Amino acid sequence: MQKVILITGATAGMGKAMAESLAENGHQVFATGRNIPSESRHPNLFYRYLDVKNNDSVKGAVSGILEQFHRIDMLVNSAGLGLAGPLEETPFEEIYHLFETNFFGTIRVIKQVIPIMRKQGDGLIVNMSSIGGRIGLPFQSIYSSSKFAVECLTEALRIELKPFGINVCVIEPGDYHTNAVYNRRNVIPQKESSYHRRLKDYFDLLDNNIAKGSNPEALGKLILKIAASRRPRLRYKSGKLFEKITPCALNLLPNRISEWLLARFYKI
Image (cartoon, rainbow, N blue to C red; front, side, top):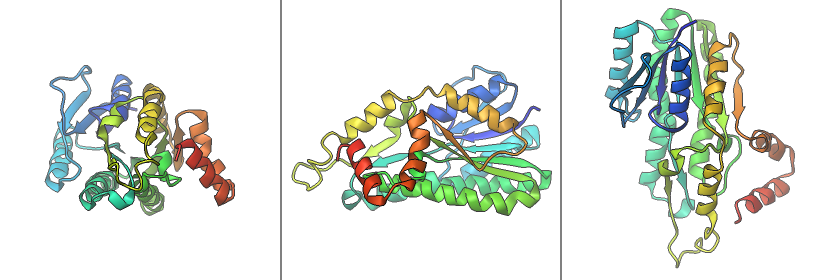
């Protein structure tokens, strides 16, 4: 069945891959973000400006969709930022900015869409988390914290909204070969910093993992599966096999071993 779908952060990266896949398969897709392309390659892919950090922007985008199609069947919260570096040296402004996008931005859009779906008696909300939302990644404590918050939000809303016919689920992707490296803020320690030597190769490793990441088209196939599901699962893992099993495996191991493995993987 053709659905009207709103996707945030859909003008690049994983959001764009999902938007194009859904549009190519007959859905009416509103791909939103702050940097809007001049034209769309698909007749049923509509680009709209939406800044998840701004209430008026969110309200305006949602109202525009209702004026055109009178319903919203599915929301995909894909807008997000990355932040890496030692917490001690990370400015509070960077922390606020990341949470405004990754967590509060997600809430802003959800709050605008819930009344619409509740009146319809059905709907699907898909939140984008990360492997970092299941395990705390070293020197990505703020990013992981924001994604942990999204995980908890999803769990609670899934129960809260079920009586209204609204399903809620979360996708936990690993590294994908996208422009995510440009959407990540690196807090690089100065040479005199106590963290400088420990993080010498850390940021290069993060960039390399993204460069060797999975093809975003895999997310396009996954979102089609979720959109077609009558009973979506709570969690969908996406990425390479080791990325899918790592969170569960680390949680089963004693803390000392899981911490040692993460430190070795990130070369710190």
